[in-house]
Length: 64
Picture 1 (tube, one colour):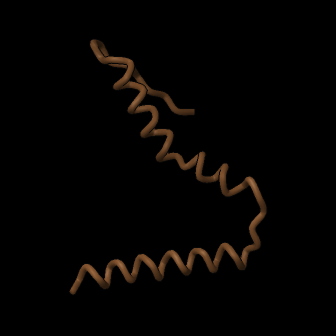
Picture 2 (picture 1 turned 90 degrees about the vertical axis):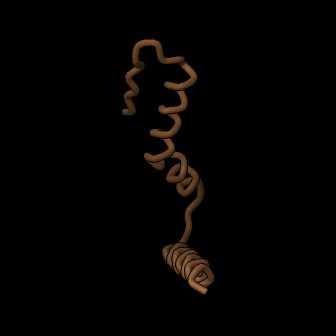
């Protein structure tokens, strides 16, 4: 459960923004979207490898 303490003289918008940030960090929505349909383990591993290759290529481009 996410708890956000509202400080004195703090606007509700500010507290809501902190709540959204905490909620996003938990990864609940990401996991929910991943669970909406079954994905074979081989497919998920392939996607993970593709993401790693992409990140490596970005890192290689930065170091030129």
